Image (cartoon, rainbow, N blue to C red; front, side, top):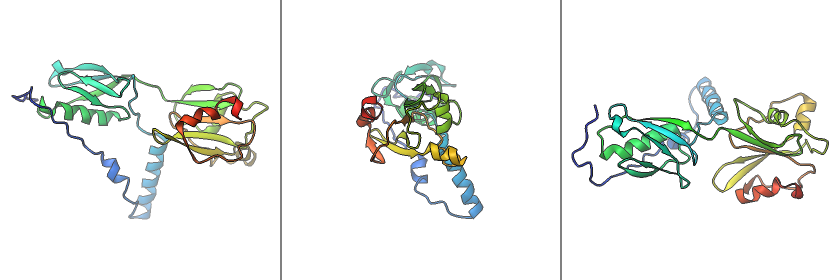
Length: 235
């Protein structure tokens, strides 16, 4: 059972815990070949199915099973922070739900002894992808389950008669400042009836079908320049 600390109005010390994944990601896959193959398959699954990360505007219910007087509903503010009752502001943007639990527990560690906390997302940004350029129905679509590039193009109505389907571009955000650009030769894949290179989408991916071939395009481009590729004047 949680016990209040006597000096609950004292100074709050926030402890920052580094996720174990940071260290795990630096370790090579070693050991028995069968075990390594299993690990690679697991990483591939995580690559296609990443955990949801908190966005601005998300609404969360925080429940304290043993101290329900601390139960509260919070909204992620435009600066990425939530305001915790009796504690103050903590940053949660781009964190997974388990990471938010750890952050809230650390924040209340000076108020409660070994606090138990559960976090439930009540309103959040639904996973989506965007298709632009030379398709019948360009726009933003819900990402429901595993979806590949060719499936996304079908959802958008398919190519129109101006599409350069040998050079479909997939834009994927890799940081706050950069997006990665991948070229997909859909024409070749369909002609060869080989979809082994049909990429799986991640939430937020953007697909562009140009009407002329891009002479050159860098693998990574700044996010502010992304808009010019989706402006019909520029392709």
